[in-house]
Image 1 (tube, helix red, strand yellow):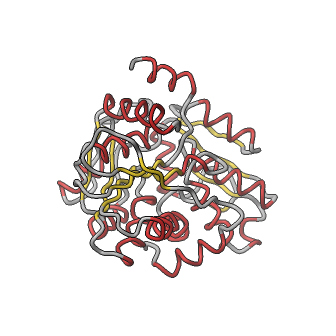
Image 2 (image 1 turned 135 degrees about the vertical axis):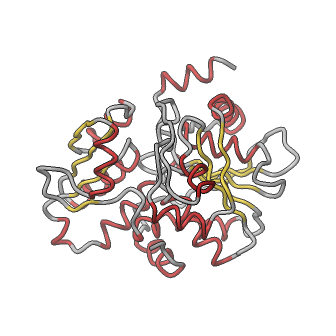
Length: 313
């Protein structure tokens, strides 16, 4: 079940003092339409994930999470859960794929989280089973959870207050919790706003699944776009995408890299690969020529990789 407007408003109240109200700034780019950046990279953990993690954990009965929390994540949700667990004084365990970037894993460890690194298939199975053998803890799902989506939906509330005349929003699609959470709120407040999911060419299961009318498995290859590309979609998230989204935009790696350089040069902002996909899609005008917002979902990119991407300009 997706969040609703009331749930997002309640989440916005709960998140005061935890998640920042991030700015939406105009990007100076060579385009005939206005592009804005919603800077979720400025959150305490460098990612929007703190919103959903905090809302889910604050809404859970204290006795449920006292024994600890568990999540599956390639990095950003892991940091969100670990950050909130430290705040609440409970242990956090994170199951990560063996392809997860070390910079994100080190951040989890700094926050006190315990990491269990497994092959990609076992990691994805943890999403499906919402448990991991030998770990007795409350599972906090990275995307397929109404409370997590309500936390993410607070971004939509802020956008509609700060940019009420916006025409389109481009959101990176990983599991769908960010895109569907934002879309549910924005569509309730202004149905004419178009919301698109940005995917990477290294793994674009939503695009393929929408075309097939059912979840399908696609080829996936690891890259610097580590926050979104995957092999398939959850059936429930696919149904929400059908109801809430206006389409998908698949971004080439070279275009994502160019967007990362553009944002660094023009806005002096570091964004990670997933965010680069959203920016590239917004600048390309594939979301339309009106006032368009790209969700800069995070800035947790390995600095060596960032320098490598920027050094090719």
